[in-house]
Length: 551
Image 1 (cartoon, rainbow, N blue to C red):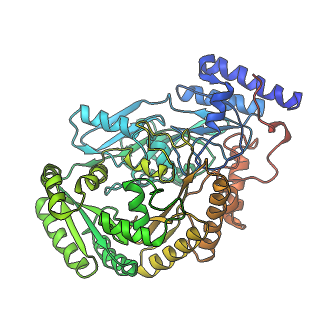
Image 2: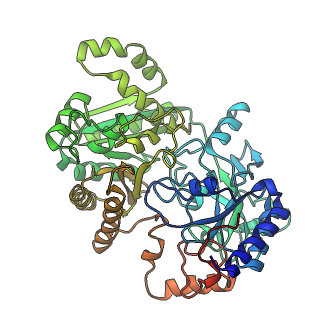
Image 3: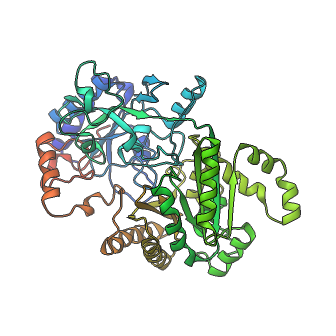
């Protein structure tokens, strides 16, 4: 590190310590190394970690960043597993950890909304509603109860209920711009606007989307709409035995989503995905071979009652509405699935009570299935869980610990998430291509398809491996990059990117030029999250690298 670079970083750290308190500026080498570690190979170094407590401190941190030419990279909870965790998109950044900003600012039971800061997690909000006896549900992802609501929303994450589009069910953003100034979106920019937490468009150009998957500002407050608990809720589960049955299944579900019979996401997972949710890689039975041999996969699927494709979803409404939706779903899936089951609270209690008896009669370990099924059932009602996180330990040779942390435990995970039209032909073409590529690289093609909207499917491809296995980091990244390239060649682009791929997806043309113009106007020094989705050529200046802090 040159003396000039060390001076820039030292000056910034000193000023940040004055702004947020020295106890909230972390330069300890072991803490920085932990923050630089994700679930795939990364090379970015972090200069420091700064933890502001409120909007005012965020503003001052950005002013200091501009004065000292010291770039910062904001995170909420840092649980962005599979896409980069806490690791910045560029080298030499200081992490701006917003976890201390964890206040629930406003709540309205009657109108069904809550206003939160970026440190508020889905587990925290769930507990908040439960303590008040609220009849409102959140929409939860399967990542972790410790995941940030705002962090997931600005990445355009999705969940399981009719409110599954998280950014689409938000409004009234408070945003700190790169120079430290603040704007509010929609009606929130007007004094005492009554509809600010209720109507996202306001008047004039709507700016909310500029701060989703971008580096144009830091969202420090957001209003999230909550779902009124329905009179009745019933989950459904189905199984398709043949891989060839996927296209017909997707085409059967689409009309029900488009006409409103199914109001929420339906999730369809292949055999590899379900198997990784039920347990870890069967190293002994596979005799140490990878990827999972086809004959063993077939045998495990027979033992565990897993289909080639396995789906779930939920029906919400009055008892009469759910009854009619159930009838229409049965009719639509008749001949398309080998098994269709409906589950409500009463049936789940009975299944749990008689699981061992059922196993003795049928030979099916229902208790093991219920261990996975119950949390998924809860997610459909907005109850956060970290159980799906166990699948990140699929290839590890030790069981998941009670407190799971994929970054700390060396779990390898890359998520590739292309979006396709909601048609069976596209589902088949997309998944066949994925299976071919992932198997060719020696990994199990764990795939889930989500009927995300009436007209689109989101495909989540999990590349799960053990980072301690020699060569797997490199092979996994090569596999991920080939997936992105081959899928794009076929017209399937991801809705979300890992920090290692953000610069590779910039397309030439007016759209990219407009984004770069906005970035240069709002952040001429490129101090806010450089390289995050919007890359400005020539803006990386020499004083930023290398990034090792001055201890």
